[in-house]
Image (cartoon, rainbow, N blue to C red; front, side, top):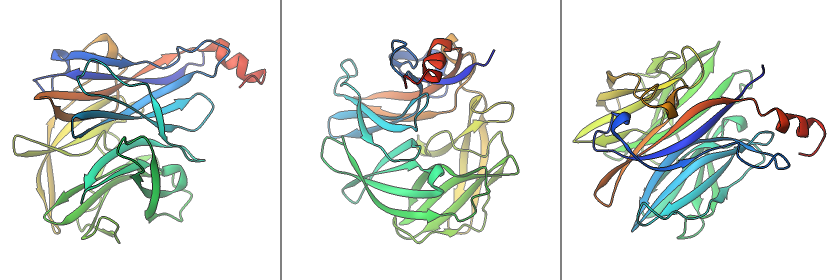
Length: 301
């Protein structure tokens, strides 16, 4: 049967950062639960956590079956009570991977805008982080023949240099490119070590880079067998204007650790909030959704 690939989100409190099986579940967001008369959400994915003052924000891809993805947000002050979802960014093309970060007292979002063949920077409109506006296009691609370009983009800032990582897919292979600039708003030039990975197993980010215990880590989604089957962790040994080196730290941190991840997943994000390690992941699942597909054919949505 023709199954629909769906994604759902799980938020964990976890002392053992890379052992998902030991996590305490704080929140789950599941797709596909609307009544048949409403177009269901098939994807809730790419969860990014962001701490600002006394609030933890969760930004994520929010996609209905037959419409482009938008970026939604919920937040909490105590890890128990979460706000209702609000759409914070919507375009006439698909959005996902909403990496949010603070720089120079401004709060920005760098979502995936691959469908627009560009890397686009947005900035929050208010202190509730409930609306973002377009600032500028950091990079653009005129080669529309690429299967995927500028996917899952994020930036790591070190010593005043902005290291931008993004993936293109050429001839069916993920290629992780590294660019750098001395300004957030560019221009960006290709790093001498780019591409840093040409591989469907490691060549696409599964979240932004993060520091833990004085060490720097990169997450990579495993797309070798199927899209988004698992997450692998690399430790970055060197990153400078001339050098980049990373070593595989741990493989397959999601799949089959619990029933929630039985089909795998493709995202991992980590922050510290209220003195606790909070982890955001997503997980893949397959659903028939036959009544919903019938309603779509009949023109209800």
